[in-house]
Every structure is written in structure tokens, then in C-alpha cells.
Image (cartoon, rainbow, N blue to C red; front, side, top):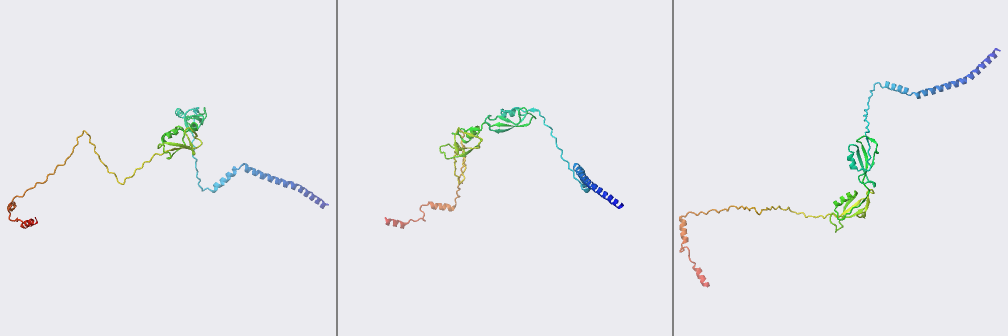
Length: 300
């Protein structure tokens, strides 16, 4: 009986342990999971602790390393501009007069464009609206009209190249080109003979558009070139003297050179005798030529 009682007691204990063991294992697993989640959340929510620990460890490993420290340049703090003026209304005003009027108040930076609604020199746009506060002396962009883009070609007949250039500038035509054309014999040199736009002939009074990029070609007869022959020798300079009528003409004469005087030798005895002989016609040394006289008579 005692053995049977012991067996039943052991059987009851075994069943009890089996019943407690399963919930206990589940509880331990749940606790472990919760611990893991808690530790993970702590690391996520407080990363600075790890950074501090890693920096401490890194500093301990590199105690002998000298760190270079750099200081960032101090940023200059610009004072705020004081808005001490009001932008005036400049639309419709002429740029030259307005620039002079507001020279000490506002600086205008003009941009020129063609505009059909405003005449040449008028302001038709401003960067800041009228009434806007601004700092006195500031720069403001404005757009100035160049007038209508469509212009009329001036007459060219009888005008020279320089004269027609001034006429094109007055007509607000800037895109042009002058080309020589010597096929017009009747035209005068350096005068305009015809006009073209992109190869098509145009005439005075035609309207062209400055914004389409087409160029006005102006043909003129070139001046005649006179060529001179080059001399093979250098011309000699001739000096002329002009004498006034009321001034006396002074002539210089060279002095005459007199011939040297002839001196006769003094008479001597030999000379006297020779002179006497020469003067005596009955000189015995001179013999008549009888033979010659006989020969002359025979010939006669």
C-alpha cells in the first residue's frame, strides 16, 4: 500500500510540474523579448551616450595626436539699408532730363528697346513700382524707347557716301553696308547709285523693319584712281631767285687780270752786228737765183 501511495504521489507531482513548466517557459521567453525590445528602444532614444563613449575611446587611443583647430572667419554684418526715399513715377518721361533731375536721388540704368507706343528717348518701364520705399542713391533699371522699329529709307540721289551715312543715322537705320559698284558710268564718283535689302532692290520712301535683322546694302560709284609713272632718276632741284622790281640788281664783277710786262734784253755787240746785217739790203750772203730766172724765162 505504501508503494502504491508513493507512486500516486510521484504521478501527481509530475503532472503538476508539466502543467507549470509550459507557462513558465512562455513567461521567460516573453520576458526576454521585452528585455531585448527595451534595450533596443534605449539605444534608439539615447544615441548620444554611444557617441560620447566612442569619442572617449577614440581620444584614449589617440592621446599623442595633436589636433589642429581652425577658427572660421568672422562674418561681417552689413548694416541694413535705410529706406529713406520713395520711388518716383518715371514712365513717359525722357531719359536725359530725368537722369539730370534725379542725379542725387536715384541712379538710373537704361536699356534701349524699340517701342511703337513711345517716342524715342521716353521711359516706358521701371524696375521698382511708383511709391515703393528704397534707399536714396540706389540703382534702378529702366527701359527707354528707340521709337518705332519701322523706319523709312531716305532719298539717296545726288548724295555722297558721308552725307548718306548721316541721313541713315538720322532715320534710325543702323544695320547697313556700303559696297562699291563701278558699273554706272553716268554717276559721279563717291555718290550713291542704288539700294538693296537681302538681294532685292529697294527705293527711297520704302519702309523697313529694324527688328527683322535684314541689312540695307548701299551701292556707290568709287572714286577714280589716278596713277603716276615712277621716274627712274631723281629730279634735280632748281633754285630760282625772285628779284623785286624796286630793288636794284647788284652785279659783282671779277677784277681783270693784266698780262705780265715784257722786258727787252739789253743790247750787246753781237746783237748790233746782227742787226746791221739784217738791215743791210746789199748783204753779200744773199745771192740772186739766176738759174731760176733763166728757167722762168724759158717757160715763158
